[in-house]
Image 1 (tube, helix red, strand yellow):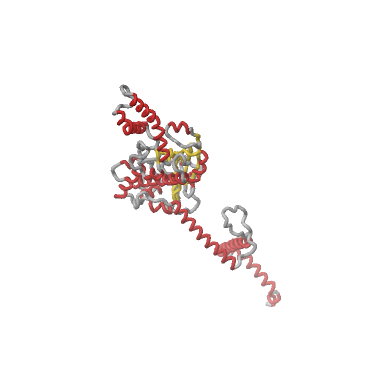
Image 2 (cartoon, rainbow, N blue to C red; image 1 turned 120 degrees about the vertical axis):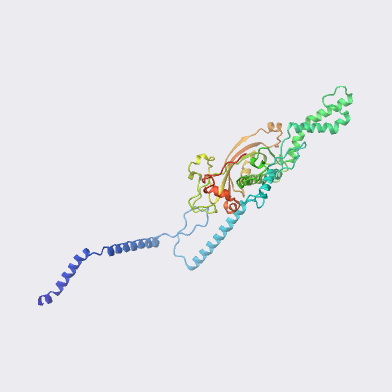
Length: 442
């Protein structure tokens, strides 16, 4: 015992050393692993706090046109600064909502027939068929250039004219003879002047001279009473609407999309022409052709619907497998998606040479139309006048464009028939695979 008393400190140290040697071999691996995991978590938290502490603070950029680096925040925001920031944030959110509401208002279109969409069935379908045919019916010009039958709403809207045909010119000449010369000539046939006395021969010559001026007079009358020339095949007419049966919802939907695009183009023409009195003064002289191919396909990620929202950037046409089978890719690369539909179309007009830019701007102003390419070809006004197109004194060109129109789902989705929505999303049983919609018969 005396030895232990005299060496107590040494013995204690020896025990501590022995415990230190034995403990690592004691079976406590789970506890060690837990401690190491907690240590790593603390290290991660410490790294995050350190990064947050030393991270540079910048003032927010509220001007979208400002591309300069944002100024650095010199200190932590005070309560007044935080309150001001909340006020600015609330005002920004309010303006953003108002801007979106205005965008939707500008993009919203009205169906040709109220309540026909989205159901597109019953009597409304027949009404749509009849009104579609009326809207797309080309007016037949009479002897004086006025239509002999009621023009469709599109042609009324633009105040369309068409150079008279040879038959119509001949009818005008016959009418001139019948009303002014036949009574005095005793019914003699023009050109058969044999046996007429000198007075009647002079009268017949007067008629022949006046009849030679009729073609120019009738053509000029059309130019003076019309705002624009159009051709019978200018607009894409869907032949399925000639049937006596009710059109299907898909046909009605596609025809309505066409009408909305045509409506926007016609309004752009009217805006560009402004207060012009007739086609000779109007910047846009001749609506030659519009072609609207089938819609582009959709790109929907798993779980996405056509409800008008995107969870990321809008997809591009390059994201579509086998995209080469679809219409040529526009420079924008836009593709129909949950937020909007994209419709491509080709537009061909004859316009005054110095008004090309004005018309392109009119297409896009307050309309969701993008002109993605354009080409210009000079036209011989003199040669065209011989064919009956009197464009006026200014040089004219033929403007050929490829365009895109965008329709937002925020308003369009509520009008979309269920069968169309299912086809666009590739729903089972529709015969489609989200690659697009079947073509139209023109």
